[in-house]
Amino acid sequence: MREGRPEKRLFQAPRGTRDVLPVEQDYWRYVEETAQRIAQLHGYRRIDTPAFEETPLFLRSVGEGTDIVEKEMYSFQDRGGVSLTLRPEGTAPVCRAYLEHGMHNLPQPVKLYYLASIFRYDRPQAGRYRQHEQFGWEALGSDAPALDAEVIQMSWELYQLLGLKGLTLQLNSIGCAQCRPAYVEELRRFYEGKARHLCRDCQSRLLRNPLRLLDCKRDQALAAAAPASFQHLCPDCASHFQHVQSYLHLLELPYNLDHRLVRGLDYYTRTVFEVQPADLGAQSTLGGGGRYDDLIQQLGGPPTPAIGFATGIQRIILNLKKQGVPIPPQEGPRVFLAYLGEEAQQLSLRLAAQLRREGIAVASAFGNRSLKAQLRQAHALGAPYAAIIGEDEVRAGTVTLRHMATGEQRSLTFEQAVKDIKGNH
Ligand code: HAM
Image (cartoon, rainbow, N blue to C red):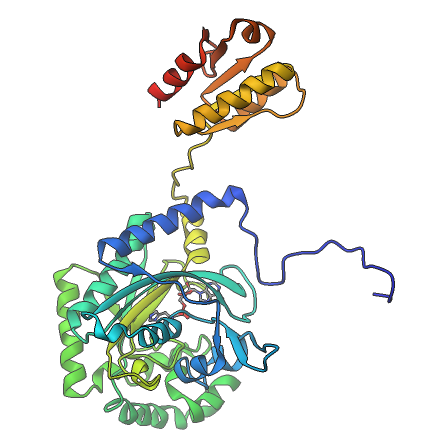
């Protein structure tokens, strides 16, 4: 752009972000309402945290060697010189808030849910954006395996209630600080002799974070033959995992044990799980979560075992569309107000206010358009009634109520019209 001359291009939403237009909103409302209902049924209360946090919170929780921290964070210095990061996930902020507000003094577990925008500098493609919205739930302050089962069950239930079919539930246990080092060593030994078969990323992961080799999309065949963490658990973790599985059986949840499931964030311990749709693509995971028993302590709090789950709303909607799941549409206007002339417009404004006070959704014409054009608009909006005020109606103090589907028209007083429209609600 040359200086002094304003650039004339039209702005677009930044790469990897999308507007959610009114035609999409039925999907959003449907997903959000369903998720909130599930959360409330399970005793979760909503929490909202800021869109940005101090950067070290994510370095310490998500982990410095992860893709999120290494490549994907939107970090910046504010004008006061503080390093801040747009939230790249929701769990660490919830733990920060749990500690900051002394929630460890409440009866445990504390159950919290959130609906939050998440920011990751990802390579954009279908189902993968730089800003996405997550619905998540976190249960903090209990290590009971029954809580794992409840969190997994409610996550699974969400997709069932939404009407998604053909999903699979993957389950694994990656152990704890006691048993994991020996397992990771075993994994390193397994991969060491095969390093030349690994992709470049994995060759460096072999040194820094061998667990992550298991979920590399390119080296799946090797990963399938790799040792399984759930066969290398200490007695406590083994017993915990055994209990989780027995509760899942009890709840008749069909899960697959998957030793390659390790998740992309460093804070996990013991149980991890993911829900995937039938047609697997690189970006297919619908939701995932697991235990993070050490995280609150790592953030300076008392030992506080916890478990949670999050799901991307855009990915859910993508799958709802793919599977053609019918979505209940938002109710449109009940009545369309049409008028002819200035005096009629004034009366129609009054009638609109009266109807809305009665809780009836109203749309109305603006400007001087023919009655035919106004009725066409009423039809396009799907309003079951049109209330027409023309010169005759002004003189008589009435309104003509037209039933749009049949074309039947009746002349009524305002009060009668309001009653009629309300009565047929
Ligand atoms: P996550 O697996 O990184 O977990 O993200 C959760 C979900 O967010 C994914 O399964 C996916 O549906 C969605 N998602 C992730 N990245 C993108 C993206 N770039 N575009 C669209 N959707 C995306 C977490 O964030 C953990 N905090 C979950 C958790 C809660 N663990 C314990 N508690």
